[in-house]
Image (cartoon, rainbow, N blue to C red; front, top):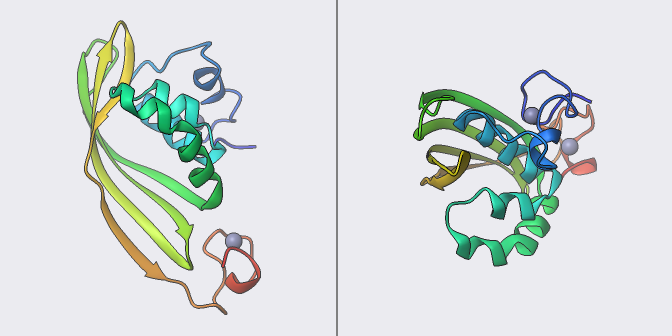
Amino acid sequence: MSCPCGSGDSYEACCAPRHDGAVPAETAEALMRSRYCAFVRGLGDYLAATHDAPSHAKESAETSRWAKSVGWLGLTVQGQEAGGVGDEQGTVEFSARYLEDGAVVTLQEKSRFVKRDGKWLYASGTPTVTRTKVERNAPCPCGSGRKFKQCHA
Ligand SMILES: [Zn+2]
Ligand SMILES: [Zn+2]
């Protein structure tokens, strides 16, 4: 299976070692990808653990439930400023897409990341959200080849 974050590598070679804690993300982009991937897999605890605001920890179960309830379509990383191996902070611009309530939701965000004790954390970001209704007879945007009404509607 190729990794849901879209890196082109397998999940085992890409985000799995970050999710199980074996290899922390070296860059802000790697952390960003692993967080997207954690949404796809419903790993609320990982999302809480990689968030710079401890208050998010108690929301992890709720986050997992929501993340599992939507149909994840993909991630596109558009750019990174700083956030490299030797940096202490950085930003990553990306768009993430998912299916929810009969629409394709596109979340466009420039997120800020900080490194604490050698670990990258998500600090903040304000998404721009657009929703595009999907026709019930149109091909499902997930690429299954089925009609939307028979798939993710
Ligand atoms: Zn990945
Ligand atoms: Zn579908």
